[in-house]
Image (cartoon, rainbow, N blue to C red; front, top):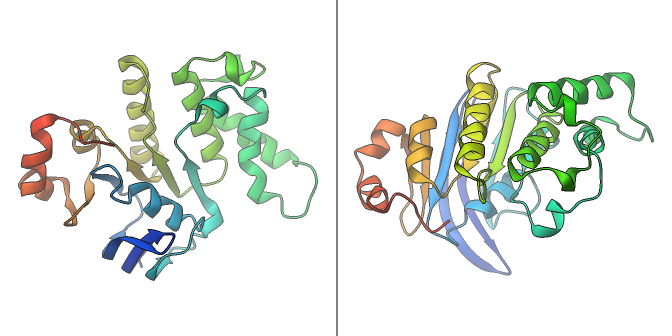
Length: 236
């Protein structure tokens, strides 16, 4: 069974439908990039997968033992979040929250998971630093480490390179690719950068007035790619 299946899924908010009849499935180890026009429903789809809002219609099914609360999530950052007054360690450890159940304190296993993910993201020397003192690229690595504390199977990343400089952008793409290829983590990423999406992903979901889902090679041969790759980027 697929890790995630969207069946006749319709999305919207405040009674307004923005996506209708969406069908696709993701298998373990896939790297899916979601692209499309601004306001087309990309972030809404991600929030619906996470259970943060209900679909207008249709179903989202999970398989291979994946539970909704075991999906790692890196949302778009806001200005307020960038100024959050907590340490790197505290933020990463908070990613273990869903593992705690009714316990009031983190246990030894959860602390080790946080430590391992801090190390994996190259943040060990920064673990006691205040989050708001870090660069944009370092902050995104902290949030990625936090997301990894919630999952061993699937990561959802909502425009993780938005606002980053070219060096930090390249590092974030390389980290994500390594998690996918080396650790076998399924990646679903929203990206406004079509060229990078096509470079790193093996599957593309294009949402707009028409919907495309298929392999990277199929996308490159489609009218969607010929239109969007002309400008290099979509509108977010």
